[in-house]
Length: 475
Image 1 (tube, helix red, strand yellow):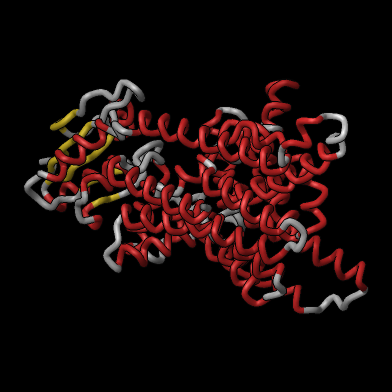
Image 2: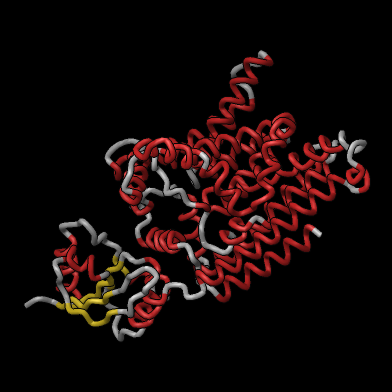
């Protein structure tokens, strides 16, 4: 039943990919960055606020002939692996009720709506969730060399892995103190190797950022500017509380409803069964919550993807704990004697999650079926331009939709960049003319140079339109 469900969900994801463009704008930015790396491999500033692993992997895939849709299909496969690995890990790890815990947690993981959606995008979250789960499996089985490599890769993929590194360090210190082990033992590799990877990246970026770990400050500044606030404490008590429970309660509740009720009851047993699984997940949860409260991230639902196995396993333990508690009252309440409490609760939760999945798939289908109409028609226009002159473009979606040779695009930042007009005019002088993809608002940033040769219809959902300019050599 579990594997049949995974196959059905995967088929549904593939259908989504074939009929609806990627709904996440960051996915296009990642793909554009990967293309830029091929042209400018030594310019590490291209990565901007993101860590580099996903971009390098995508660049390699592009060199082998892949496109953005290829990466989306790969994510469907990666996403399908996660509940399967979770099942076998939990089934092998726990002796008491192992089949029940493994089945329920994996089934809920396979049906988790936001996981299903992100499994159709070209985003790095599915790969990150897989790496963290593989790390937990390997370190729990004392495969230290493998676990250290997996955590190192995760640490240059997503910042949340740094919280796992910190949790691993605390576990290492505790084990040394409790068991009176030597400070130098094989478990230190799980701390040293990822730390070395992070330091190498920070030192490599320092010349481009002007200071060590400068990209972290850029991340916070970007989020602060986008949200127009610097922390949750600016909004009063209610704001603090709502932001505090955003990831621990609100996000899982809107995607699973009833099942979140059982998660707290699973904490005591889960905590005893697997310390690395528990503390790594708690570390990530604390990290993304603190980041959201300090407005260092945008509070996006996809940051929760890596925590899905943790929450579904908590739910499975919770169902078991509540069932065992209700059995105590079976003598007082006849109907409790007539049913299998554990099976009944599980069935209700599973059906509830299936209903939520269907509901969210319906919502997403309706919301995303039109895609980005103004960007599509703009991409079609530039695709049919008869020449091969440079195209200045900061819109990754138009770039990817156009399917034009990526070497034609110049990604010089056109917003709040005083030098950009001269760069465009100099390139036009060298080539005779160039094209610029922008918006009416951003046209002012390049001093209104160029002639408007195309304007897309307005997308009334986002109130946006795309301009295409032709800038010719000045006499």
